[in-house]
Image (cartoon, rainbow, N blue to C red):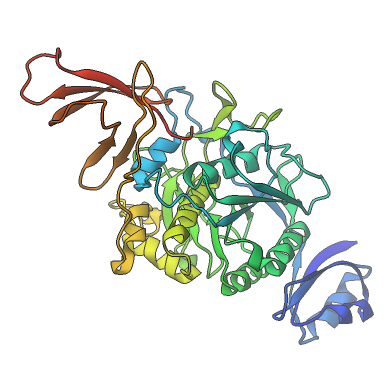
Length: 434
């Protein structure tokens, strides 16, 4: 017997009178619904359904997979992109507009709420797979970990669509879209770090209608190195490609020029990610961290930026956000696969004449005995290092990076005009929420 997803205009009840078995239905509100059906006699059923003007489309119950590229993970343990690297490359300040009042959904493999990165986060778990709570793959935990480290005051929702094997079917995706369509007042941003193996007209239309309701969506562009699949191919999708820590394009990042995929690009190579307990995704690092590559991890970085953006512009419509990020992105020269370019959070927030957030003025944390907690921004025009007011005497200093080990950066500061290193001071810039 053949399983098919049928997308219809209006209600799906008429399908019960067709020569097929209706197994599930999905309600998306006023614009339409869908159903998972099983044909007893495919030719007869197809001829009847295709002749009905209430039927929008009929597709196979396709398989979707998580956006993960293990073969593109560097073997060098020192090659790791931390959340501080994300902040530097994409100009994301750590302390301003932290996502308060914003709720972000990750449509993914679940979440391990015991990871320390979620110690201060409020997380709701919704499961449409029947697998229950938790994260047997580790993917959803890594994705939500990226979001919460950039927007630590945002509330989180784990919308689980993948079971233990990191695969799902279109009918499970439709269950999740049904939840999203019927709960639009409960969240602000949805991240989708997954994709079908090809373009699905049904997923794309369902995604477009969700964005039309005011939901700000962020999706992974894909990891094929060529064309990606749905939902990145939807007309209203805000899709994100992957780059390296130095802002060059990742070789695996998908590119569909006719589908405007990707829109912008963010770090998706060798990311340092939160590890779900008992999972083996990626290359293990010290502590509960792993290293992995994929547009799966560049997308939630932009979702975190969008959450922060809404803290400054709470009424921004989805199209306004896409425009702001596209028009302020920094182009990767001679590289068409980057979309509009590297996402630039501070520039996007200031788009359209609104003032960009100033560097934080609140006191920095107390310095540790052997160094200092500091916040570092790498802007297009200058580098900015903020340290405690009493850590250095007044004056101008020359700063030299002496070590960078993936966990932090050691800097050597020497007062201008002084000879040698006797008047200098070394400090360790800690990686914030990491």
